Length: 203
Image (cartoon, rainbow, N blue to C red; front, side, top):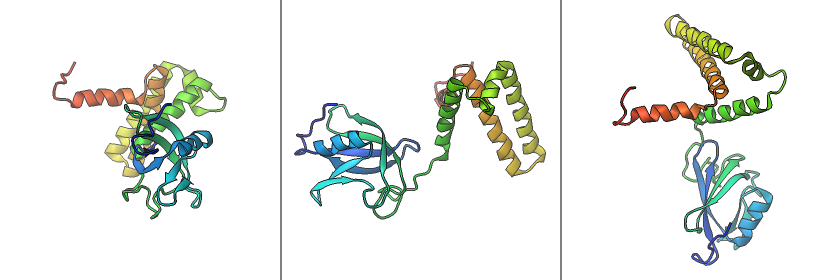
């Protein structure tokens, strides 16, 4: 990757974003040496303008930023680094440098989808998900139906706790079915997004 370090006297800004929650965690600066060390070690290293030296995030606190991907912007003078953070990112002890909580449970659906995709690819023995894939589409669809009925029963005559439990089962089995048919949970999200637009018309 060719970066333009000249615009800011040898530095480029590096935006750090959580790969899982998509939260922006912090902004730092890198020189060529810091960038090379980041790429070599897989842990984000900055150039500290106050200390005038390289600084690996977490070298003192243990709260490292583990690199998932690194992208340059269109002018090759700013980096977007996706990470898995270990602990709070800000030196003040907060999850982000803006004082936000780094939580977004809805993003777990993507992680679950990735996990189910991996199960579908590897088909490990003694895995419940593997057994569902081996049962065939008809059985998987039947299981989605059963979980939907159980969710309805809990909604009408059960407890809120059991409603959430059965609803989670329903979503899990629906993702398995989608995966078997070559789709992902994002395909449902895309359909819902299209329906939300003013131009959408029911089929």
